[in-house]
Length: 168
Image (cartoon, rainbow, N blue to C red; front, side, top):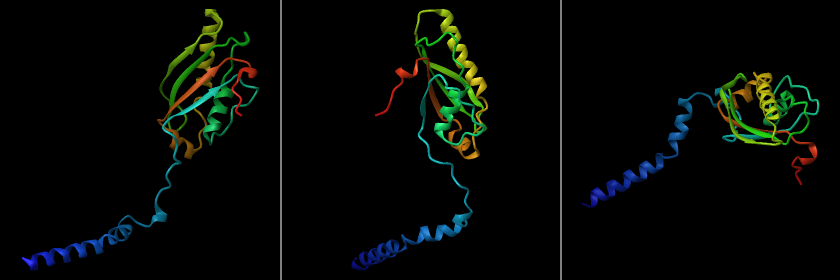
């Protein structure tokens, strides 16, 4: 009986001694680590951005960061010429790797401003036109790979700059 216990102890010592070896052995099985494809940057599962009326910015020719996406969307938006109406609409949208809109954008919230249906129609039409104007979004290859299929939430706010949130 004692021989079986000591035999089991030797097996345990032997197996514990091998535990650091498998990762070292596996490195050779999967090729040189320097030959592996570079992974896209890690991003949050979703992204939220607030789009205010633009200040005459040009649509960027290249979008490389999440902030650039918000700036590009803001530059694409041409709000109504009626003036500030106090309206806002929140949409959820996803992009393909090449910058095209994936599927159909979804309106998730609408806040009514001045109670005039002509203003509401013009406002929502301007938001739809901004999405068309910005598609395809000129993503760099890395950003396109990182954001493909991820949900973006954009809140288009038709208010003057004085009502905008100012960080401390």
